[in-house]
Amino acid sequence: MTKTHPEYQYLDLIKEVLDSGIKNVDRGTGAVSYSVFGRQCRYDLSQGFPLLTTKRVYWKGVLHELYWFMSGQTNIKYLVDNNVHIWDDYPYKIYNWKREGNVKLPELTKEAFVEKIAKNQSFAKKWGNLPRIYGEMWRSWPTKSKRTIDQLGWVIQELKDDPDARNLIVNSWNPEYLYNMATYEDASRFPICHNMYQVSQKGGKLYLQLYQRSADLFLGVPFNIASYALLLQILAKVTGYQVGEFIHTFGDAHIYANHMDQVKEQLSRKPRALPRVTIDTSVKKLADFRPEHVLLENYDPYPVLRGELTVAGGLYEGKKKKKK
Image (tube, rainbow, N blue to C red; front, side, top):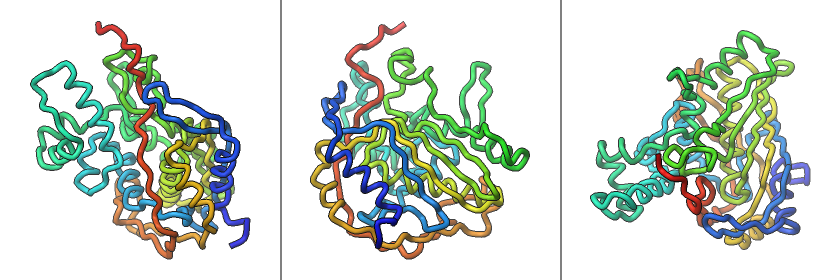
């Protein structure tokens, strides 16, 4: 393929970070990464679906996680039941945090914890929930009056009522529950990384721009590209527009130190032809959508490149606020 292949935007970005990224140290975990700030990639979905080919992307995980978000779910049991384990670490982290003050809670390995989520409904209900995660923020944003706001549903309706609207934003960044802005008890124990997206119709095509304040370029970003490109395609399907561009805007774009060898291997590979994604014609509205309605065709990637997930970010526990 020529240098105009859209995947080179991503490859050029990881090469820039590899060559000139600035060292960062996560204050909570000590994890080292190298980063640049303020970059952008654009993917025209009419030219193919931007599922990276220089390594195999976990497509099943993309499908089920996006459905989990879009349907407003917050409990990992849905993911665990579908053998998708990309969110296991965070409720397990919360469970261990709660154990510190409750000797009645048994010590569990992560594997045992996930098995109990899968097999014990009451345990899953109590310990599998991640309040104020993307699904809740998208579909049931909490308000002081106890009313909830369906941001994604509103965007879809506005596209029909006011196609030229400039305010079609879905936000996941709620300071009331984030970092040391929150009370210690209310603060989320997981980071919100892809924190805001805006949708716009131009000339009969639908565009989606994501702002991602923190981006793990090797593990997370290939997943994020596919997820938001698929979200754009679903939104176009239910609103009747053609697909336009997915625009991916980054704040801090970084590579963790323990991913450097994998990144170098990925850079040695030349992108292959992009695959095609189609959505079943039975999907007329958002509530119709299910993961099985998506067909991925002609995906021919290089082999998977594995890397350890760094569970960094979220509330900094070094300065605990006093409980009230």
